Structure formats: C-alpha cells, structure tokens
Length: 443
Ligand SMILES: Cc1cc2nc3c(=O)[nH]c(=O)nc-3n(C[C@H](O)[C@H](O)[C@H](O)COP(=O)(O)OP(=O)(O)OC[C@H]3O[C@@H](n4cnc5c(N)ncnc54)[C@H](O)[C@@H]3O)c2cc1C
Image (cartoon, rainbow, N blue to C red; front, side):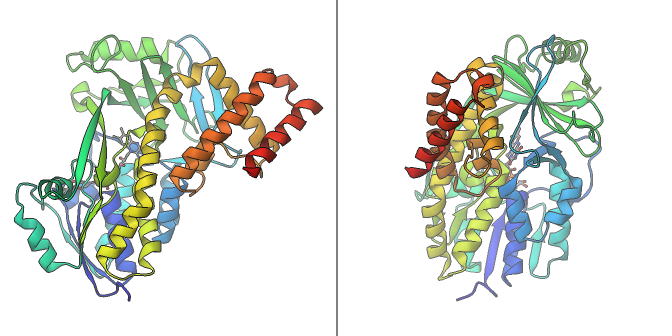
C-alpha cells in the first residue's frame, strides 16, 4: 500500500514540520500545515534577529536534506567548522581541537536561511496547503476529533511546548516531563576574524568552569555567540545586568584584551536570557497521531543534534513507511525503533555540557582527545570516537552512545600505561594500540 493520495495534517512549520511536508509531497501524499507564525517570519529576513541565529548542521541532518534534494541548495549558505577553537582563559592563547579527519566538518547555518529555503520549497510544492497565522489551541480537546475526521494522519511538529503533546497527555494517551536545566543562555552577537580564514572555521569556545561562551561563524561575516551560564551571579545572565556590565563581563571574563573577537552594539534588550529545557515523553504516538522533532525529544543544545535528530526522524520514517500499512502501524513501529535513540542523544547532549565547559581545559580529557586524534589519523579504518559516531555517521544514537563509551574505557586503560604522547609511536605502544582496536572489534 502506498501513501500517495493520503491526507496528512502537520502542526508546526519549523524545520522538522517543513521538511516532513516536503517528504510527504515527494511521495504523492497531501499535506496541510498549520503554523502559528506568519509567512513573513519564514520568508522575510528580519532586520533584528533575536534568537538561535545559527545551528550546527551535521551528517544526519544533511542526509535528510539530501533525501529532499535540498542539500546542494543549503551547502553554499553554510560555514564549515572543522573542530573546536578553545580559549582557555582571557590571557592564554587559543588552541585547536579537530572534530575528526582533516576533511570532516560540521556546518554552521543560519536558522533563517534554512527556514527560508524550506518555506520557498513548500510554496512551490503542488500538494501542500499552508495555513500560516494558525495556532492549534491546546485547550480545545475537540481539535483531536476534528483532525482525526479530516486526515489519515496527524503529525505534531510544534516544538518543545507542543500543543499536541499537551492534548494527548490531557486525554491520557501520553506522559511527559519537561526538565529545566539550572542554567540558561543568551545570544551574544560578535564580530571576529574573517570567516573564510582557517582560524574562523571552528566552533569557538571560551570555557569558564561554571559557564561558557561559544560562537559559530555566520555566512554574513559575523559570529553567532551564545553565553551559557547560571541566571544569577558573576558572569550570569541576570536580567538586571546593564548593557555596560554585560559588555564588561563578556570582554574581561571571556574574550580578554587581545581578542580578535568583540561584541557588536546590539542592545541587550534584544537579547533576552532564556532557560534551557529538555522533554521526555512516551509514547510518541497514539492512533493517527505522531509527535516528531522537539515535540517528542527536545534536548539540551550541547551536542548540536536537536535539529539533526528531528531531520533524521524523517529519514527513519521514510524507511519504515516504505512498507506502509496504515498510520497506526507506521507510527508505532517508528516509536519502537526511535525512542531508544531519542533517549540516547538526550544523555549525550547532557554530558557534552561538561565536556565543552570543563573537558576542554581538563588535563585528562585533553590527553584523551589527543589520543583519540592519534588513533583516528593512524588507524582511520579501525577507530571511531563518540563524536565521529554522532556527528559524521548515521549509526543509531544508542549504538553511538554504547560503543563510544566502550571505546572510551579501552582508551583510558591504554593511557594508564602510555600517558606521554611522545611514546605513542614506539613499537610497544603501537602494538598496544593495535591490540586495543582488535579486541574492541572482536567483542
Ligand atoms: C540555544 C540553542 C541552540 C541550538 N543549536 C542547535 C544546533 O547547533 N544544532 C542542532 O541540530 N540543533 C540545535 N538546537 C535545537 C534546534 O533548535 C531544535 O531541535 C529544532 O529547532 C527543532 O525543530 P522543530 O521543527 O521540531 O521545532 P521548532 O523549531 O520549535 O518549530 C516548531 C514550530 O511549530 C510552531 N508552533 C508551535 N506551537 C504551535 C501551535 N500550537 N500551532 C501551530 N504552530 C505551532 C512554531 O511557531 C514553530 O514554527 C538548538 C536549540 C537551542 C535552544
């Protein structure tokens, strides 16, 4: 049975809802999208961008964009990031930590550019009906019946505060928890080195024990900085901080006097601080309904995977729907396969806050990263670290988590015997490396 000719409702035309509609359209299905915001919000470049201006796009997201034949259109709008450039303190020189092999990069892309590209494609698609300025109200329980009567399937792609999730929970079909982290974030637009330079093509991190500033290069030549910190205290995001205090803190605590980065003069009032949250929900499906993207698995942003995971949802759905029986079966098979991966990437994202904020200046972690890089460049066919598994492959997240942890333990054991990088090329150490990799693959 094919999905061609079937009618689907999609609530939310963010990155996931839009990409899903384009995939349904490519299969000959009909999609009606209900989106709270206006068409302008997606199609007209704002003069002041307030939130989440740039995202890191990696293999999983790109694979789904390839499925939609949109990868070639987005790549020219992306800035590659080949690794982390770490600024250990305001006085010390930065250093570079590659993400993988020299050709491997993740890509910084503006949320607006990505949304605009998707919405331009939606406008051209034959069997997609757009309903902008259309909020589905989570108070109106009758909406569920109305949608069910009209559509063969209903996709809730309405983000972290999903109305669909609230409605299905109220009707007793799903259970969810929203976890609020004990820190938040504020966008910090920065000027910096020319983005075509090698120096620029990285994810820049200023780790400071209890907080960190990061910056992604933007195609327009600026940098999308984000400060992650507790809401209060020194260096915090306290909303009472004045523009002058804020500039002073960012300059003195993070950037330092000699920095090639500086703050833009964007008023602080345009840069509200927000809490970070994640969502756990189960099941993601009920009858004709399916929660997708952040509605099902919103995670902390520290692995740069929230959007990538949401886009990958569509790829996985396309594989399951190839053997289409009906929405109920497809949706429950999807949940059965994908939930374990949603949970795994949530764990990985939570851990990565420490890895970025503290691990980038922690002696053991730095040694581990150096050894990982040594293995990767010396044995590129036999070694894959957790980062490579998550960002440069489509191995299910739960396998990336388990295998990455197993490899970490093997490397830790090696480093107890060989903690001096100058020794790693000696015959004894090379033999130990080979044996480590052989026994890892044998298990
Ligand atoms: C600070 C930060 C940095 C991040 N960085 C990265 C990164 O580098 N890489 C990465 O992969 N991910 C990143 N993410 C995560 C990424 O932003 C999300 O995972 C992604 O946007 C989820 O897409 P979505 O379409 O599921 O939801 P959303 O983008 O939230 O879209 C939901 C859409 O639904 C609409 N909507 C909501 N409610 C209703 C309603 N009731 N009726 C109608 N419409 C409705 C909204 O207007 C919106 O358009 C980051 C997140 C944050 C907070």
